[in-house]
Image 1 (cartoon, rainbow, N blue to C red):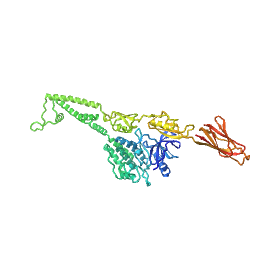
Image 2 (cartoon, rainbow, N blue to C red; image 1 turned 180 degrees about the vertical axis):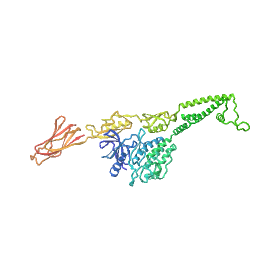
Image 3 (spheres, one colour; image 1 turned 135 degrees about the vertical axis):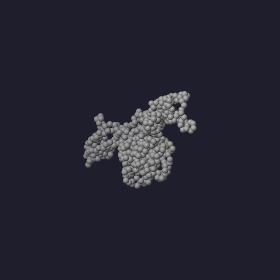
Image 4 (cartoon, rainbow, N blue to C red; image 1 turned 90 degrees about the vertical axis):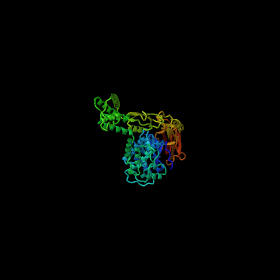
Length: 633
C-alpha cells in the first residue's frame, strides 16, 4: 500500500487547519485541526489520494459521514461538516480528547469492573445506532475512544451498513477487521445488529484477558477460527456473571446472541449488580427483619441486631435469645413456680436426663440458694444484653465495605460506588497518573461503613498544565525547539506575510501565556518566501486610469503591452501613451514611463506598501494598451 502524504500544516478550503496526524484507517487519515471560523478544535478525516480517484470509494467515504450525521447519541462521535478540497474529500468531526481503548490495552487488561463500565457504555452507543437502522460492522478497540472523564465514544463508521438492507452486493473485500469479525462477516453474509454484538463481545474479552480470543494467523485463518473454534477460557479472576455475558455475545449463531446493543447493555448492567455480594446480603437481612417483626420479642431482637449492624454475629443474637429465656425462668422461680422443660433446656444447653426407674417425667427441681444466686447473676447478664441490643438498635443502619476505587476511571468509580452503596465525593489534583483515573480515596478499601457513607476520591487531573511560550518573531526551527522543551507539540502552516522575514513565526494559537495541558498542539503560522502575486489587469485606448491598488510588499511592478491602431502619424517615430503612478494617500505622482512602441515591457516600483493608482495619458498617436499589476510579498 503506498504512503499517503502528510497534510499537516495545510488548511482545507482556507478554513480547517490540519495540525498533526492522530489516526489512520483504510480510507483516510485523521488530523487534529482547528476550525478557523468557529475557533474550535476539530478532527478532520481526509480520504487517501488513491481512493479519491475511485468514484465508488468516494461515495463510500461520503456515506460514512452521512451515517455519522444520521446517528445522534452522546456516545457516538458527532459529525460537523463535509467537503471536497484540493487535497481530497474530507469530513470534520468532534475532536475527542483522551485515548483509544487500543492504546489503553497496550498497558494490559482492565479490572473487571472497569471493563464492565466501558463495555456497557459501548453497547449503549451501539444501541442508538441499531435503533436508527445502522450497523457499525467494525467494532474494535481502535474505534472506541475513552475521554478523560470516563466517557466512551464510538467512531469510524467507515464500513457501516444499513440494518434494513435486504441484500448486500458481493465483494472481494471483507468489511471489518479479522480479529474482531463475526462468523457471518467471515462468510460474507449480510450484517445485523447481532454482528456488532459479537464484535463487542470480542472487545470485552480482550479487556478482561489482555488479548482477543483469536489473535494469530492470516486474515483467512482468523476468519476460520471465528467460524469454528471456541474461545479460550477467561482468567479465573473474571466473575461468573461477566463470563456468561461474553459467552452469549460470542455465540457462533447470531440467533443465540443478544439481538442488539440495547440487550447486551442491559445484560451487562445485570451482571454488574450481581457482582456485589454485600448488596444481596443487605436485601436478605432486610427481608429477615421484616418477617421477624411479627414473631416473639426475643426473636425480633435477634433479627434486628443482624439488620442493624452486619458486624453482629448471628451467634450473639442467639445468645440474646438464650438470656431472655433464662430471665423468664428466673421470674418463674421467684413466683414459686417451676420452670418448664423447654426453659430448662435453653438455660442449661441440654435436656436433663430422666430420674429414677426409667420414668419419663422430669424430676422436680430443688431450689437451692446457690442456684438462686446463679439465676440472679444470669438476670443481670440479661439486663446487660438488653442494653447492648438497645445500643445496637440506636445505631441501626445497614453496613457495607468500602470498595477499592483507585485505578478506576471516573465512570467506573461512580458505578462501583453505586453498587456497594457508598457516595463518592470527587476532587482532582495534578499527578503523573493517567488523566481521569482515581489515585486516592478516604476511607481506604476494606473499611466497614454505614450504607450511604461518603468516600472521598481524588481523580488525577494529569500532569500540571504548562504555560505556552511566546514564539512569534522567532525562526521556525527555534520556535519548534522552544515548544518541544515546554512539553508541547506544534503544527506549522506557511502563510503570505508581507514585510516579514521568511521562515519566521508570524502567529501562534494558543497565544503566549495561555495555560494548556502538557502535550497540547500549538498552531504556528510561518512566513513563506516572497513571490510575485497578480493583483489586477486593465486595458484601454489612449487615456485611462486603473482602480485603486493596495500594495502590501516592499516593491511592485507593471507588465504592459501596447499596439498602435492602423499606422502612426509619423512614419519614423510613433508617439504613444505614457503612464505614471499616483500615491492616493499623499496625492503625489512618481515613476512615469513611456509605453514604448508596442513591445511587452515591465516597469518596477520600490515605493513600499500603500494605496496607489496608475494614470495613462494618450500620446500623439492612437494606441490600444493593456497592463497587469503584480505585488511582491
